[in-house]
Each structure stands twice: as C-alpha cells, then as structure tokens.
Length: 350
Image (cartoon, rainbow, N blue to C red; front, side, top):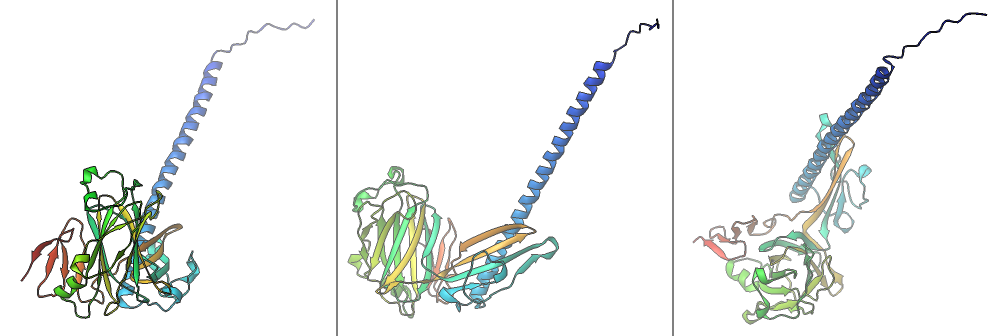
C-alpha cells in the first residue's frame, strides 16, 4: 500500500490577499470616478466658456446689424421689410436680400456669427419687464397713417387682481396698491413739421390707462380740458397682455413721425403698442427686430431682440435714456431742457 504523508496546508495570508485585491478594486473605481468627474467638470467649464463666446458673438452681430441699419447698408427691399444674411446657415427662413455674409469674430478660436435676420417693419412696439416708476419712449413712423393706436400691457410679476372702473380716487399709494397690474401714463405726440417747445406741447395728448376689469377707450385731443382721461383696460386672464386700451382719433403727423412716451406706475409690465387704419393693421418703423446666431466651435447661441433706433435718427431732436438719471430732451440745441425719470423738468438752460 502506497504511503501518503499527511501535510497540513498553511493558509496564512490568504485573507490579506483578498483584502488587498478588494482595496485595489475599490481604489481603482474611486480613481476612475474622480477621473470621470474631472472630465465632466472640464467639459462643463469648456461648454460654459464656449456658450459665453457664442452669446457675445451674437451680441456682436446685433450691434453690427444695428449700425448697418443706421448707415443704410440694410434696407427694406425684401418682403414685409425682412432682410437676411448668410442664408445657408439660417434656422428660420426669410424673404429678402443677403445683407451680410457670415462674419468671423475670432477665427483662431472658431468664434463667429451667422443667420442675421433683420425685420425693419414690426407689427408693434414692444417692451418687456418695464420696472415700476420708469418710462420708455420712442419715435416711430408707420407704413400707413394710423387712425388709432392700441396699448396692451400685462404684469411681468403675474399680478392679476383687477379692480373696477376708476376715477382719480382710485389711485392709491404704492404700499396699498396690492396685486394689480400697472397704471400706464401714455403721451402721444404727432411731430409737427418744425418742432418747437410750444408746438410739441400743443400736439401732445396724455391719457392714464387703468388695469380695470371694465373697458373704455380714450380719444386723442389737444384740448386742455381733454387731457388726462382714464381708460379702463378691460383686463382678463393672468398671462400675456391682459389689459388693452384703444386711443382713437390719431391725427396724421406732418412728416409721418410720432413720439410716444409710456410711464409705468406700481408694477413691472410687459407692454406693446399696435396701430390700425380703416383697412387693417399698420407696421412700425423705429424698433427693428434683429435675430442672430452666434457660434463658438460647435456651440450655438441664438438671440432675438427688439432694438429701438436712436430717437434722434432722422428727427430734429434728441433723447437719451438712463435709469435713475435725468433724461435730456433737446428741441432747440441752443436751449436744451432736461427732464427727470418721470418727466418733470429738473433743469432748463436759457
């Protein structure tokens, strides 16, 4: 019978090897995780940088397009006053001529802008998120002489508590106004042929538009007794332009130019002004819409903005808007008048 010696196996250290292997696997997984996290953070930072570059490229395109509008390089020879540039890369079709090819902002880093769409004639004048106790004003002309203008507005803060009809007693203090949309003071001036302080004042009509659940329009008049009527907005709903007042009887302006000034009270607002005549809606010149796509490598950023032209453009007066500062309204360069943010005279030069 074959003798088989008895040998006792020594398994000391086996548990240590298993633990070491487990630790190696865990450390490897942790290393891979940190590497992926680092790559993700790096990619996120790069995407943010490229997104900012694309945004600024689009802003550059907007500024370039605005300068081309003012210089006459971009003109309204396309259908509906819309012109386009770099038609091959446009995300939105447009009818018109090619106004400007693709523009490189930084060729080394692949930053450029393209798809420049400019709408010179817009269906309305629009402002978003106008702060309370501030104003917006702009000069404009239209493709046809309007007989009425409609001002629409709604709360930018989703306030929609609509009071009833109003007289002057309805105007409360700011702290007691509550959750109603804004009251708007709207002044409309058909520009005279040779503007002076006296002729501008004589041609200006001012009305107060109240966020009422009842509706009432106002009529343009230069009579002193007809100034300051209160128009009810006929407001409803809680989003968009919920209130609307029609200004009827708008006269023709000597040169087809109008100046409108809107002061917002109580609540931040989204505001639009549209117009019509006997045949339908009119189109506005004065606040073109510019649509530009900026590109940084493969990252795209599209901006579409309304850009008011300088109110002095093609008009014999100048206005400069600055928040919390006096506004300059110079009819006669030799006698400039300065107005504060609510239109009160704060300095007049003789």
